[in-house]
Image (cartoon, rainbow, N blue to C red):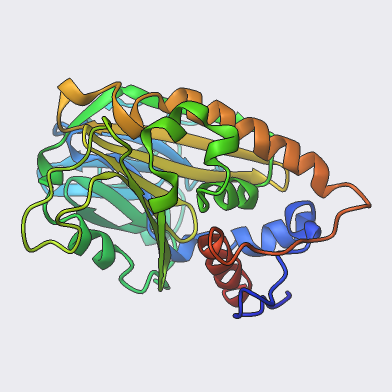
Length: 350
């Protein structure tokens, strides 16, 4: 792995092989389990509700019982069959292949034709469990015992403390799933700079004061603060808050490696980036609404349009990464600090 010069005025961007090499892709992706992954909102779950979730190549289940939330493998311990196909309320989990049955906590219950098997069942016949963490009704899981997030959520908690996020309403109609023909790093690269907004997002550019766009970097992530242009909705920020007096139209949080939290006056849009291969990325959107009257207005007015505009440029860049005439480039010290920070984290952590 290469190193990125910490001096942005001297640094060169990642080499193109980071976006095209399958070995580099798998090396980086193998460490995703060390970071908390968003998997659902508490309001989606009644008692007995079960939801299958896919994180990379891992198939997991999130369930809710009277004991709380449980996260465990969705792969049967008999022959590797995926157990749960559709979400919904269930009394138990039954593998559709040979009928092995598990509780909603992932514990083995019974299995036909196994009466004569010695030393059976053992704890290896239970489904592997994963840690869960809930913040403001947002549910996260950790697929690895090693937690390398370094409390990155503390930055979000402190800065967004003026919002009652736990009482935002989860809106399933705002869910989206996109498959993009580009490396996941390119998608994050694009997210981490507002440099392209005047060129790619004409309507969004009208809502933001480009000259006041700010980027802040911290251990574990990046925050971009979009200031509202004249006539654009902004947050009602209370006295005492560090942004009091500013017309903030959007807070764009990126938390390493693949979580984006986009706060607008109307609520919160969550982007989860799921790498599939070195040139395919799945992006999922989830939405929580705080003020319905502000939907369709301001910097978060038309997220679908902005997303498709972003997809066009990252897919085009993916083609460029395979060109023999491109190796890497340079950073804008004023507009690409977030991108530079990401690249340093990426090369330091892998």
